Image 1 (cartoon, rainbow, N blue to C red):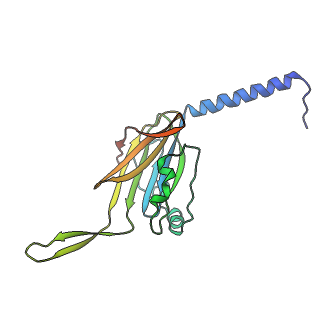
Image 2: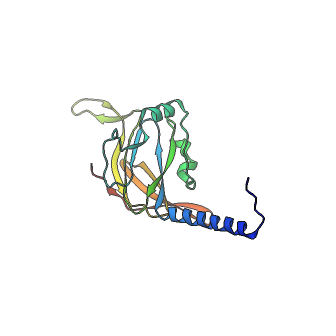
Image 3: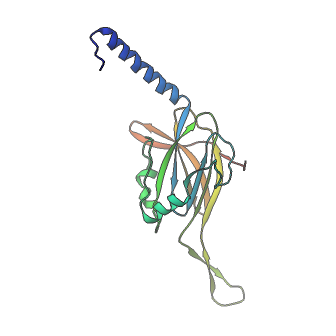
Amino acid sequence: MFLCFSMLCSTSFAEEAAKSTTQVASDNAHISRLRMFGQNGASAALFRDSACVKSFWSDDAEKVSGGFSSAFSSFVGTASNTSLGIAETDTTRNLSRKDGILSKAYFREYVVPADKPSSMRMGFQDVSSFYVVKSVAGMPGFRYDAVSPSCRGAISFMPRAGEDYEAAFAWEGNACKLSVNQVVTKDGNTELIPVPVALAPDC
């Protein structure tokens, strides 16, 4: 057991606390944080420190969504979020709206290196088909085609030190969009600010 009876120890503790604070600041100067989403029917893989992507089943792919365990937990509704402290956004507050039949939505947050590209391979396959009506030339009536909408692609971006980001894919009309937004908190309000992304080629 160590006891301290002098100002020397309190000075030492203060120095250690200052070193710890400096170390945290130094660490933050080299990292960023990224939030990604998943659910059954969606695939998402992260490739840190890379401007290109490999196969989803590559050993270098960090599987956010689409692996067996994540798909099963989403299927049975036991999938849970993994947070590193990125501020809540409208997306996370309304995440349950993305839930589908046997497909619970969730998010996971990651530390990524700052000032180095990180890439993501993401895709979505709707688990519930819908129908498109088409007229049949020369014949009365219509033909009904079952369509299962999908959205997939690969993007990369350059995170900046100490910043938080949120990556997602969404439908805008008939167009699929993969994007990355910076999560910014101002005056108690959280905003999503789009950041530049590029198509990520295969490695």
